Image 1 (tube, chains in turn orange, brown):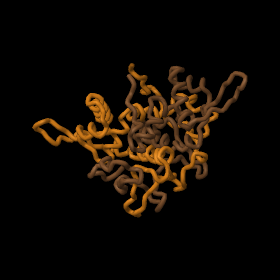
Image 2: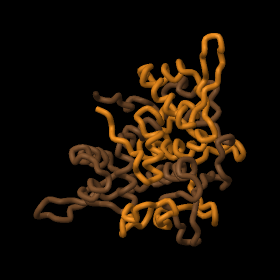
Image 3: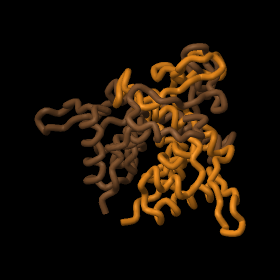
Length: 162
Length: 162
């Protein structure tokens, strides 16, 4: 059964999920951020069927999130490397990891920790406002219509946040 | 075709996706953050089949991300409201929205903008270190084994980041 598409939705979450929301795709990106580049390494780590992995990698290359870098011209083999657009997904992956650590594994059971090398501490990301520098808390933000909104009804009258 | 499960994976990204990674689920959560609470409102906004919506809401309730709040005892009707665990997903949704604005819609075409009410500015979230307060940049972080890591090979020898 073919899934529905979010492509027609005038929403940045939906449009992002159209690229990264497929089952497996965020784990492929997780491994790319861990430095995995080779098809066979993704396949071995994820235990994913080769045809599905190939399709997901093609989607990410077509979307400009990964790029192929030829490493064996004779055999036509390429690495898959994050582009600038792909590296910009790091806050998404990091926020997902952090929620899993906080709410699924719990304190003291984290499989991985994140070392912030400039300060030498294990770090937790805090979302802060790029204007005033304060922490962004859900109760302090409101979603408002932007220049690209086509249908005002997308934002419910009672909307208090994003 | 039943999809594979990430349940056995010792990874916070995989465990989080086991809860929020289903097709539609992040859009249900998006709408919950926009203030949608009623089954029929989710259904009308998303255009999703009622049985699929019902299954996704049940999964989120079972995972403790949403809770049912009875609003019509006579008819047994409940709202679906984010719990504390659910509200903790806001950085994930916000990071996804922001990436879509930056890399899919582009500057000046954002469907929604985020107003930070204490400072009165349209805001973009910046990930900062909870220890030193500096911006977390991908090149300044390293993923290292945590107390809950069962298999060191999960972290490739060449891993430089998460």
